[in-house]
Length: 270
Image (cartoon, rainbow, N blue to C red):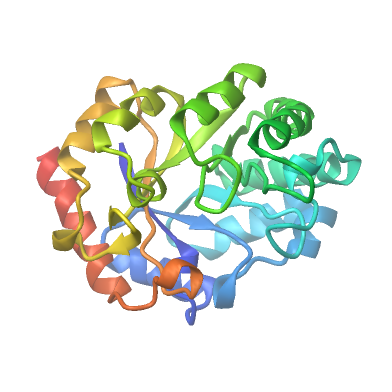
């Protein structure tokens, strides 16, 4: 397993600046996306994915671990629980070409929201049908498509995650324990998800709080690292402390927490 960190953790830094900071910290990879000062050019991803991917790869001093793609302009627009969408398939096809060109092995997308008139069951059924051609499009480029279960989406339980995975062959998850821990899950209840992880996000959390300082939360990270290893996981662990209005995650020193999480992993790895 290797460390990465998310570019959107540092909202006021450009992508090149984030890459330089992570390189200085001894973190060998970066997750890229469409947000804040480090945002990629979405139009170029969709129109010239291979050339742009090569350009981004060559501009950074570290590797690219994962690309986070958002189909619409917010969480609701073109969300996957609306069902199959040809525009989303075209986007994913281009995104997979971009990911391949920049050296990422995986990309992640969100599974969908609860739309008007839906419950979780209806949202899951629609998302499953939407995801099947997206996973296939990724596979054609050798890119693993993952979804991240998250607070306020329809996919907020372990059982629902497992049900969705059973309906979509080849689908994997970006596993962020913090979303589940903040919802009240015990860490041991989440071990069933580790075999399905193709990417991982790291931050500390506790019940009712999506993000806390490392020493103030309830996630036992050394145990989590061991669970991943024992499940055969050998991918990236992306540190994802953020400074956002979302879930009141604006009060932590992102740089210090990134360093502490780096040190926690390196101490466990030995």
